[in-house]
Length: 116
Ligand SMILES: [Zn+2]
Ligand SMILES: [Zn+2]
Image (cartoon, rainbow, N blue to C red):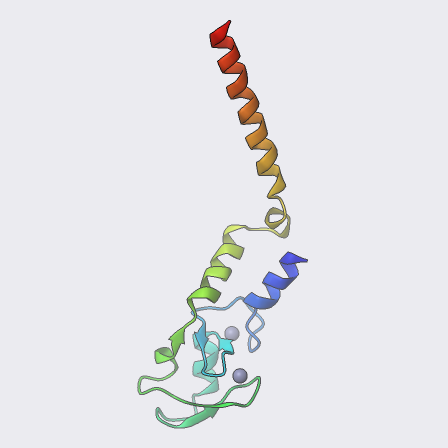
């Protein structure tokens, strides 16, 4: 459930891959830099282009799509997803709790050991 939501959020609607250097448009839709560059390649900086999703107009910055705002949140999400590797690991957090419980037990045993 969480995993599919994360997948949905980290998938670029243009290339259907994980976002690469995601840029955010004024309409709040995000696309990879390379996808936006491809999308805007027939336009000049200063021209208006349209969001592929909602058709909202935006102005291409002087230095091209690269100058659009970098979506740090989205890049962070992609990084977390990559770091977590497979789908299983994202849902494996409860495993850590039991590890902590074991560590507490060991500590308790150590304390008792010292008392005895
Ligand atoms: Zn893309
Ligand atoms: Zn849009």
